[in-house]
Image (cartoon, rainbow, N blue to C red):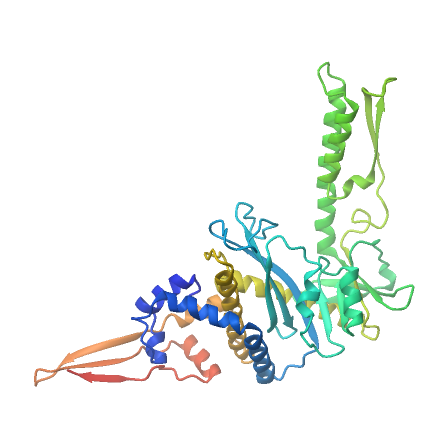
Length: 443
């Protein structure tokens, strides 16, 4: 929390820079860094018990009702190859570190932002199958609402939620985009943008489909379609021009392979094109390449800015459904806090249990930070943890030494005076503005 880093860097910080030992009355100067590693091992042995206790304490402290469960995954990369860690695998790195093996962290959170459960997965794990592993045995209350994004919202996971009597609110995977502005109602995002929501009952009457239209998203998606269509057409034109050159590529099989590769990089926009490759009488040599573009209805090209949520909660308004789903964006801020403010990345450990311990310690640090930030928000202090930490760093423990007439020296050790911003934080948390008190020593 105070100095996010590796366990080794934390050990050095405790010994040479921090007054934490003095505040806790613990002598860190003789601490071996191996003790920190053994502490990590001990925490991992009781991971489930610790998580259950910390979550229960947080829920009790803030009187939060357990009604919403958020789930998502993130990953972090290793420094080194981590050959002793079977979970360290190459996969889709969210930090674009394709050169490093990664490990995946799954989090189940309550709507209040507290972590109910965490688990470490292989770096190349696919999102869908992980939900059942995480929720199995969690004993969430019957009727709890599970919110997840499209990557996790597979039909198998939705069937699992229904079987275990969970409600669900997810982004629909695939399907045709629809939107009727005459049937829509407006809602406001936290950023002040107006969204249009169209609520529709599914054909079987078991789900609500909520079509959401964002003008800002529409502008972005329109530009994306134009860009990828332009690149796709440029690729086709290059092949067509090659057919007119004496040494240009004319082999039918090779050109079909090139067209296939072009389709793969088009982000689905090749569906709007009918491409015709005309062969000669032998069928082996291409004579001409032509194409026609007709936008397929119900796609990003014809309905930019539209996405669909699906849920088995039938009695909520469109606005309540969308506002509840928007809490999933809180997970993104959680992951940013874990990675940027709390030292989740990178992982320096090469052994699996130590790497898992590093991630778990980071999750525990987040829980503590969440308690502090939630308490501060109640009095209007909404700063991120990094900003709060900078404010807290201003105060220090100092020693003043003075010579006495009898030849002895008096040493007075106390905290510096808290600046106004820091004093306000202390007041909100019920902490004395001069932590550690005053100590006198005459020698």
